[in-house]
Length: 118
Image 1 (cartoon, rainbow, N blue to C red):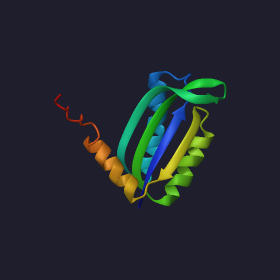
Image 2 (spheres, rainbow, N blue to C red):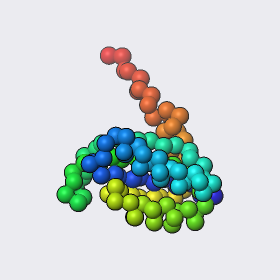
Image 3 (tube, one colour):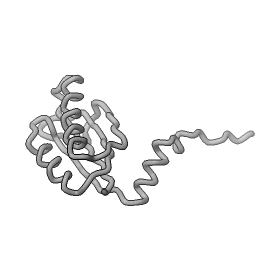
Image 4 (tube, rainbow, N blue to C red):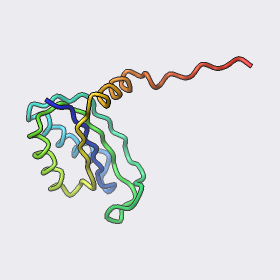
């Protein structure tokens, strides 16, 4: 099993409930195939770097999971078919990215630097 990370950008025309429902559908596809969800992070409505289909905002969601490679093809086919999805990107994580994500989840990067006495 490899570890993957998928970022999905949904259309801004959806309500918050509809966006959560759409993401639940895709997470369901991942879990139904026997994959293990490691982290799911909803970034909410964000401004896009450039317009996509004349839209300047989108609902962003990041999901990190362990799965077989066969799942990726099935998931991406469903993402392509769904009209609520503006863009998506799936990346297989290497050992360095996995270590970085584990440190990020544990809060290692949230520590404030020590103040220097003047």
